[in-house]
Length: 127
Image (cartoon, rainbow, N blue to C red; front, side, top):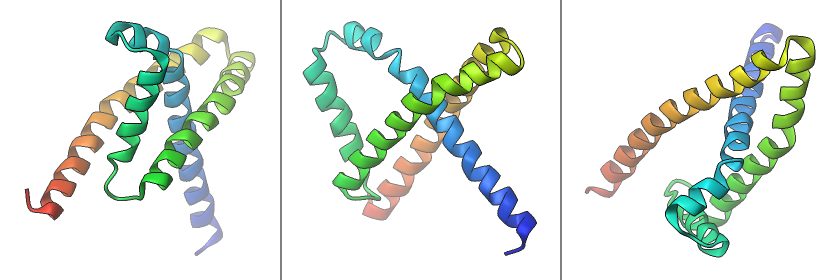
């Protein structure tokens, strides 16, 4: 692999991690509202989230839970400093607008990816 290809691949991986982290950071601030809207206790919401992670058919349960926890933790740690850095370099409006745009992109693409994954799993299982 050439140096330029390696650089572009590294940039693509960094962008994916950044978008996932920003999406998870925006989800974390909404958890209390979602919990209250569904009428769940903190323990029941935790069980629901673990069950969602456990439904991943392509990876073992332990790996799915670890992946969900790692993405959330990374977003929690990386999101606020990136927003602060962007606000310092440009302005606060741009930093918060970028979070809104990235959250919208993740929400739109997340539904598409989830549907394709579900179809692929159902196709493999012969449903």
